[in-house]
Image (cartoon, rainbow, N blue to C red; front, side, top):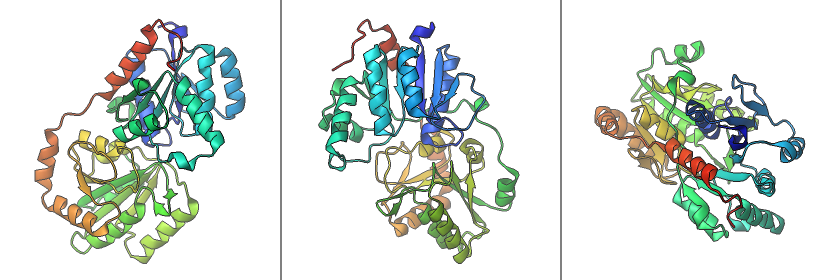
Length: 361
């Protein structure tokens, strides 16, 4: 593919490992395998082995330069920043075909200032295509004035290309799970408090471990963080673990790849207070690991749901799943994963081959 028809992808690139960064990393590898010409513009500052890789250390300087000289025809933006999304939408003025993926949309229209509302209206109008991960986001964007014909609903899970995902876990983690007979994993991009609640439910995992320990003495709970996030809250969680005397049963790891951990896991739990889909749950089910998640959004087929922030219901569902493990394990073995990469690739192909270079307004 000629460079003028290349694809630019902007957003976090692993490491650190999080839902969006892993999605971008896999999307890149799949595209390269299909002989697309791809360039990554990374919002993370960690260098990696990717040769088509540029770190955005200063967005303003980078954007000015890219606006003048950027060569790729398609620009696919995954950033969470509304300010950056607005400026990226202006690439339409250079006849770039700008596509946004919204991995989450927690804000309501009333949350925005009038200035931000204008910018959002502009970027929704200038975007050539928008991908959202569920129907709730689709209806929210259309209420905000987005043309529904330019919105595609494609959940964010792309299965791993295992040769590019790593194959082992750290010695420290191996030691932790060595004597465990029930390994539970939960993950988060980082520790975040949202509306005074633990966004990813790490606090619930602490109390769940305490409640499970009397019955399942060798239980091991692993929390995989891409990065620490809220340092004060991180310290509070560690203090709580020590106070509840579950230090031998509960461990937080930072920067570990989820794939090799899942191969040694019995159960994945995603107790998120607010969510869009839950890529880690799709990952678990793809690898035939039973999964439990809060009922805050549509979850992958095969997920066992519990009532959001209901500790008793989470404990009940977890205990039942452990006791009826083989039943749930056999149930998810029959589930066929969605091939979402093919749908994203088709969006690219339609954009590349369309003769109309104008934005869809």
